[in-house]
Image (cartoon, rainbow, N blue to C red; front, side, top):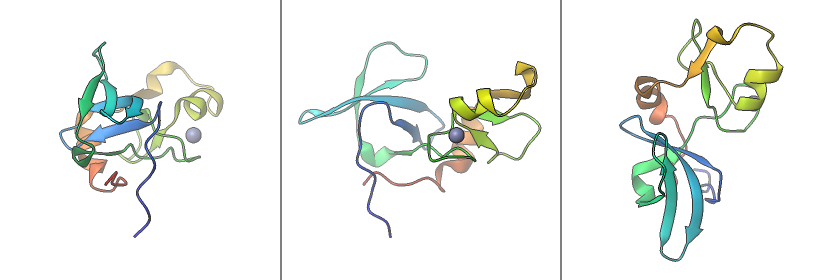
Length: 110
Ligand SMILES: [Zn+2]
C-alpha cells in the first residue's frame, strides 16, 4: 500500500457522495477546503475524502470528463484545453455521479 498523499493547498479532493473540493490550507486546526459551489472554507475530516482521480495524461487532478467517453476518461484543466481542438461541448465538469463511481478507486488520505 502506498503512503497516503501529503495534503497541500490547491489539491483536489472528492467525497464519497460525489462532492468535490479544493484544499485551501492544512493547519494544526485541520484541513480547510472550499467545496465546489461554496465560497467559504470549511474544516473537513480527511477520512471522508480521497484524492481526486488523476488526469488520463498526467498526475494532476482531473476536473473535466469527456462526454462521449467512459466514466474514467477524465482530464485536468491543462490537458482539457491544450490537447484537443474542439468545441467546448465535448467536455463537462465531472458530474457527482461519476465522482461517486470513481471514488472507490481514488487514493485515500488517511
Ligand atoms: Zn493532465
